[in-house]
Image (cartoon, rainbow, N blue to C red; front, side, top):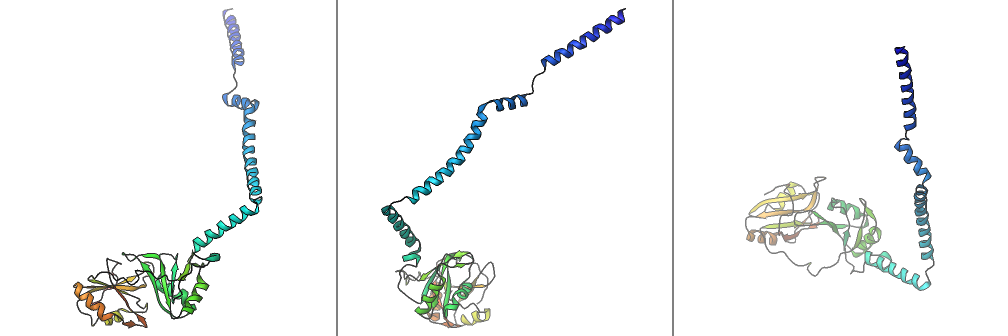
Length: 282
């Protein structure tokens, strides 16, 4: 009797719990949120807003193109004039040409890579005539300033080089080529020091040639030839250090006008350390 009653009570209790759970079942949060989003017009408004912005951008571009195309003649002339002036300011001359400078046999080559050597610069312009010298402008540390100079034998050769190379690319950079501007300070000489800058050296010069150059020069402590850090090739100039300033002055007077391999040496007093010593001679 009692076991049967217990079984009946247990069955009725479990059934009630099942019914209770089924009545208390709630929709999971993720599904509820999804249901609300589908029912809520906000989602459609967001999607519509994104589509609206995209379409508005297209309309804005169409509007700008229509506006630019609807300039009257006076505005169009003013726009063309400003564009032309900007081109002249950037390039320095009419129709994108180089600025007007006095013709000479020397040309300026700007916007070149910092690793470009004077030898490579000479090779680039040798097709236009006989190159007397090619130099890369350097700072007090001997590092390139990003421009250089090439000297030809005649003005005609320089003109051909400008016409053929201005605004052309070299090693990925668009060169600016024009006649070398004559600076008011071009003839200024650095104050005397015990270090002499020796420029316009031939690239085919050897250590033996350098020793012969300074064989008759007295009281030389060291001669340092600047080399390209990437290729190890000479950069076309050197620095000679002397015992005293007086010795450097005498050496400058002694070497002035001297030519090696058809190149006249360019001499000046050095105001600082221009390069890392690479070759020593005494």
